[in-house]
Amino acid sequence: MALGEFIRKQFIDVIEWLEGGENLVAWRYPMRDQEIQNGAQLTVREGQLAVFVDEGRLADVFGPGRHRLGTATLPLLTNLRHWDKLFASPFKSDVVFLSTRRQLDRRWGTRQPVALRDRDFGAVRVRAHGNFAWRVGDAAAFLREVLGTRAQLPADEVDEPLRALLVQHLGDAVAESGRPFLDLAANQVEFAAQLLAACRADAARLGLVLEAVTVQSVSLPEELQKLLDQRIGMAMVGPDMGRFVQYQTGQALPTLAAGAAAGGGGGGGVVGDAMGLGAGVALGQVLAQQLQPGAAAPAGGAKHAELLATLEKLGELHAKGVLTDAEFGAKKAELLARLG
Image (tube, rainbow, N blue to C red; front, side, top):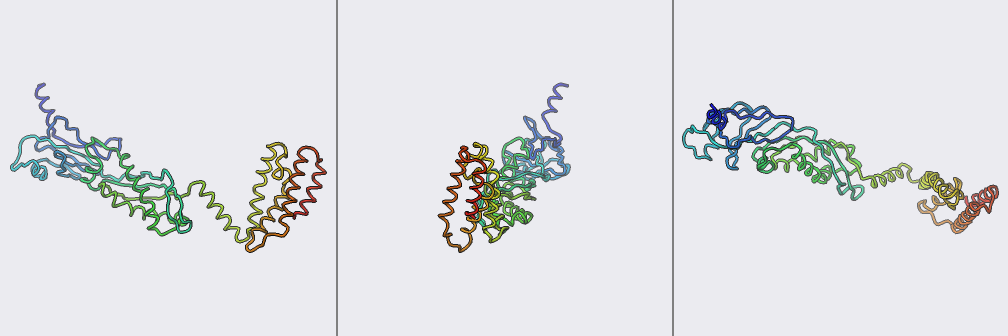
């Protein structure tokens, strides 16, 4: 009885793959020292392929269904093994199951910004990310280019070369779209279609079908985004550069005053007590006049500089207690009036 059980274990009568929760895309049937019985049953479920490989050479491929194995159903393997008549003995062959179902919601993105030519800015460094979906299409190419001799392959390991392709062809997709960076965000569907088209051929060489690509965001690195925000702000202000300078000066004053107070209770010169809101507005007006298109340098430029220097010195005297608040306030008002 023990000998009979031992003999039965050496021959395989049923070959099938019950996919578990590992999300494998390829699984090699564990042959060990076993042989496939002539007339054995091969069960291939929906979303699977079964591939017979003889000494590294791809032979027969089976789709979904139940197949009885023999010379009639294994013509390529029969030819490789030179079976010129019906065989009745067990035989050895690698059997590899492939999952052909669509792998959904795979994520891609740029680890580092990608430098691209841009119609508006000349060159930009862009970040992008989104999702993609793929499936195994060409069994022979997939076994040759991706699986090799491995016993199994998780789907996650197939994602990485596809992510590399998407990032690699990002520049091609931008060029094909013909759109500048500022228009990409508003046309993400079209941009994703261009990216999909650019990558499909390379994916096919791996035996894969890249079925869908989405682009969820296109952005600039933080430092470039700040510059873009400034440019947008200037465009919103329009040609009145004077208003823009005054606005920027007024926005900066609270921070400057706080920094001066933290540095010694008003000992920060013109940046601290001596500057104040009035000085900021006056300085903004002076700068605005100088930045107006076609405006000549003001005749009183040297006088303004002298008044600001005097104001700074008075601020230092006030900080040291030489001038009282009232004295400093009166003198400051007088100088600001002259500065304006």
